[in-house]
Image (cartoon, rainbow, N blue to C red):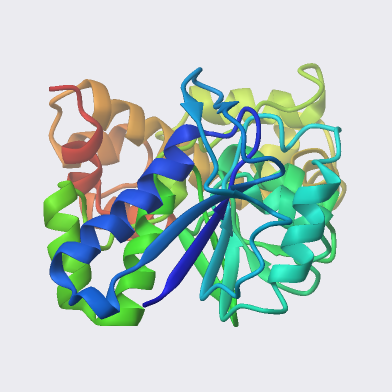
Length: 320
């Protein structure tokens, strides 16, 4: 009987907890009694606590009282974790200790920040909510943060992206334990995909505004967005900025953390995404208007960058 511990705390994200719990509990419907998951919620104190959405959760036991070894230990996320405040020392101590005593351990969403404070991310490949991935990388520079993955495994460490990605991770763990057929049966019960296509990029804003809206980089970005149908060379963009090509390329990367080519392609993808979400225009029309040249080229770029085709993106994100 595999045992699962999920660490919770005041203002925890309720869905980070409920999603995985429901996956493991639904899996029990398809398992013999002696193979079913036993799930426990643990906290610094076994008294009621408020989740970030206001509902009350009660831990099954405190960290100190939970002495048994677990097969899987997870820490849920919460809106306060990416902030400057260090999480409760009792939570961090439990995470550091349980990681040495269980087969798998990890985090859901911003729970990765708690793992980082517990010293468990060094030299590890990890992911978290796309909105906080850059913060995680800056806060824990020895971690190898993947900004796009829905979930990641690095040896015994497992991490998931934002909120509902905890369901994806849990389904993958059920597949590891009892095979893909069981995971698929659970996914059908929960009316979710057993394995989602694509990464987090399909859910996140692809472009970010420059820090200085009057900079040369911002001027070039505005020019690109206003002339997406055109083809651009580094020299042409450098002329817009009033700089040499070599100096422009260096300054642009410093200010935006991407190359000019990368920005142009992201800008085309972002513009196409908006049209796919808001219009019924033909794919070839959107491809032309956004500078891809052809629908085939747009499909190649979408698949590479978002993990889904333009048609799949439209089906998922266009309003009903």
